Length: 219
Image (tube, rainbow, N blue to C red; front, side, top):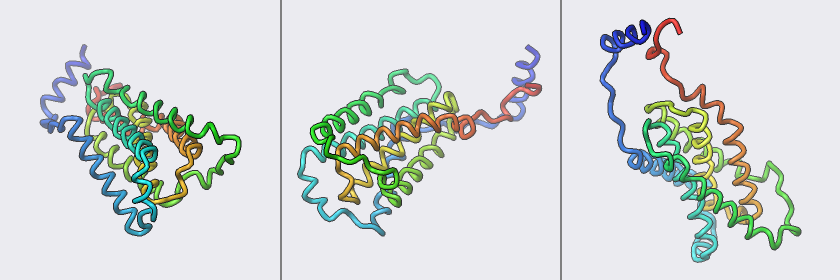
């Protein structure tokens, strides 16, 4: 009780008025705009794939790209929702059906020719230039936004941060490269992003944490 009273006294003396954050949808639009701008920047030194006009007319390719973008956006929205106390639970899980459906579509597309396709080496799984730039940059944009909010669930916030950035990078690199369209390759990429997100999720305890100045002394 004494610690609580002490904390209340400290807050009344030292705490500054909190600046209200925009609604999650507005924050999501800002992040998506910054990520798409990063993709445009990536094309300035590598260029757009030469057959983009042709593949853009392929319904299957368009559907795959839409699924990649939707999964990235919903993962980003879920991450932002975790940084806002009191948000609805479904908002934090909305990305799961999209990711599962995306993986299922790619797996079913790859299955007829799976026996004849070679498993790509890790060195050739992603573009060594575009993917790191887009994924890391997109993740940093989202992380900077989330650090301004409450670290309600830092581990899950970190996992979703990485999945959102990876999904954005997969969407972007297929706009630039014409050798990343194999369904089996895409399915492995999705699994790789989900795995990395799960493995690096504990880093969220370092990136997202309550400020020590807001804790009661003596704890």
